[in-house]
Image (cartoon, rainbow, N blue to C red; front, side, top):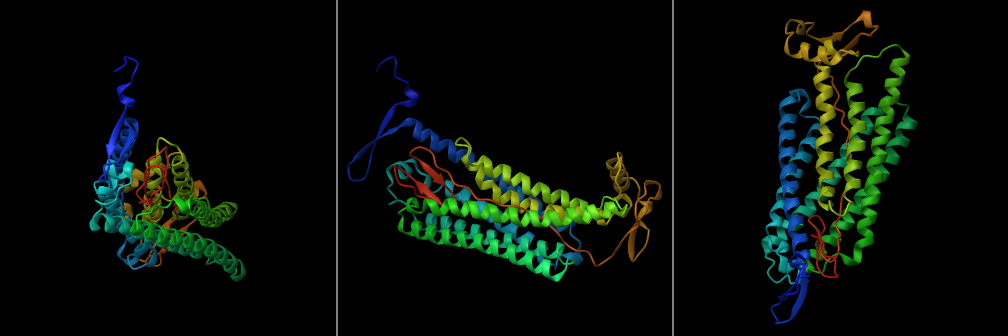
Length: 374
């Protein structure tokens, strides 16, 4: 061997079942191995985050709200997402990700269990997408319930149309994906459909979120014009809505970084996590009206009121009132049992493509010059 040869980039020869051979670079095998390890860590973190927030949602949501549609959808999103990530992690240990299967394109060792796990993850992704757009439609309806009928009808019509279009793309992609998995032919001929699905879904999420946060922001602006600047549930939902627009968009942009393809799969999890956070925080603030005020030391008053002041809880039995005339705050009365759930979120999917080995747990595999998506 020449002294100038790098053993880390040497070429190895793989022999198929029929006696044929193919030269493969060792760096390709290493690339696949690194991707599998990073994806496993990613899926494990998503499972833990989904389960933890599901427990928080169950513990912090009042019993009177647990029958609401938004609460049920949020809980199902977290539960289904945890199951989806577990299935994706199990797929990493299946024969789909064996180096020989990926490089040689020989799927003869794929078992029915491997195939069922992969197809189930695709269908659960479709189910999560449906619940996400349903939750967004409910959020827009809640914030637009006080507007005039014409504006409400136009807003709901446009958002529903965009959401239905995005879900239609996702459903079509899932159908072609399942067919490709059953036939073990890959998704190379549907690359344009995958790209269009990502774009339309991202636009739909941004459209929903912009309509949601604009309505809340405009309501907050009107309250400040009326000298009512208290920091309450509406402000918290508005802030969380802005975060759910920006953070998933950043993660979605990171999926196009060649060295971080597995981050794109975390977009759905981030959406499912941020979906109930705004309602949880707003509910906590709504139950603590004595701290619903703004100021440079508001965070100190929050912790003091929550953990050290237990005598101020008995303000009344039928309503909760916060009043601070020295800070020119308005009286905020919230009748018990008539609270409203409002959440905000965003979701965008991902894909992976690099050199000769292309792997995506959501849409299939690829090896050689063919694009096989899991």
